[in-house]
Image (cartoon, rainbow over all chains, first blue to last red; front, side, top):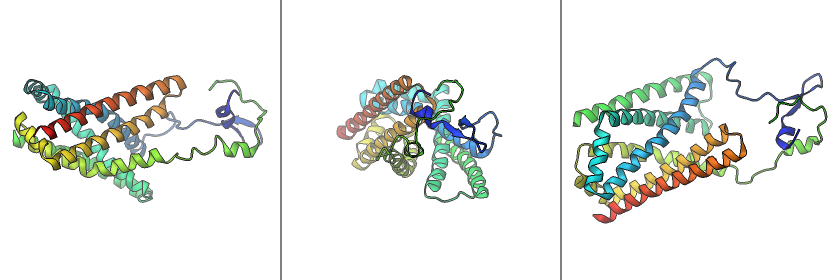
Amino acid sequence: MTDTRDALMMARTSDGRTVRRPLSPHLQIYKPQITSGLSIFHRITGCALSVGTLLLAWWLVAAATSDAAFATASWFIGSPIGLLLLFGWTAALWFHFCAGIRHLFWDAGLGFELPTVHATGKAVLVATAVLTVVTWIVVFAIL
Amino acid sequence: MSEEPASPVIMRSMLGRARGLGSAKSGTATWWAERVTSLALIPLTLWFVVAVLSLHGTSRADMMHWAANPITATLLVALVLATFQHMQLGLQAVIEDYIHVEAVKTTSLLVMKAVVLLLGLACLISVLKLAFAG
């Protein structure tokens, strides 16, 4: 035992033996479920959107810089790779948006019953798909 | 933490263990900030997506004209502030959860905060420049 955190890891079993507390999460023994799946996906999309802010920054900085810079940014965003990135970005955005609202309801103490949790989880997936498809229908309708 | 077998002697009273490291007092501040920024981002994101879709395919002059509107500029500034604050808090939670080596964690947090701050400031300056150009 070297520090306070080590001391906090110590516990006793019901028969009095001292043991080191098991660390959570035990990913290797958990069955994949919609609850844990959406939870980690919320983090993954959050990280992906953080990387995606580079695109937002590029667009805004280019617009504030010059016609040439804006043309370069527009060319990249309109290229196949740019469109693919933007598609991924909108899908991640709508997922994080919907799952985030679900989290806010939990923060307010609502929707913790297991059937509700499963229903809202499925609703998040459906809403993400619908919003992403609608967004891109609008993109191609304007083109 | 080392893999040595659990020591049978715990030199800590039960009260000491219950008290742990003590209250951080302002421990809920970051939690609240993350929620408040996420609430703000609900309408701001919806507005921004619709706005960008309506700008799709237009020229830089049109985009600058749009960004020069004071209401647009206000909403863009709010969007940038909320986005980068929310992002910084979210990435902080991820780093703190998954990086357990203190030196690596602290370095990652500092680098991440510097990058997010510079990126956010670049967006903010650009939005302001567009706002005052019109």
